[in-house]
Length: 235
Image (tube, rainbow, N blue to C red):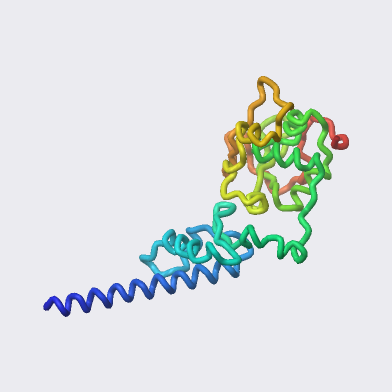
């Protein structure tokens, strides 16, 4: 084989690779635009030609959209197009009003996010007040909290955890992107409310049940969780 023939074959191969990569870009771009939820790299990889690195495709799309009206972002363990931060005000009038949570609901959501899996009685112990059934109903209906399983303890109370929709709503890629104690102190969010033994646990939303959890089972009342704590109104 002559040098000229070898170069021609190499150029043809390179051209074929570039064409396949360009097609992969188009496929991933289309899937992300059409999807209502973030898509994982694994899901996207199954839709593109074999031999194409989906990580490189996503990196290229991120670069291409960095200066545009929408940006490619990592959220909820996947990838999704989101309005560029500096243009968010243009869509404020058209966007659906954000769900407004009461102080009690925010406290309960925060406790679930940091302490999951956690039962209603454990939430009430941490808050120091009773948690109304309606508060948990709101979080469940919003899709930010889910029923995980049942604690292996008397009454077999239901355990709660967060969902990918929670991560997406708050712009988080992973649950451990939540701020830690030092970050909370740095923002002044908990200034003046610290106790000596205060600790913020490292959050973990592993979907697998823990050793002290059983599956929910087929028959259950969603919030009839068997907790022995009081069930009065939130404060």
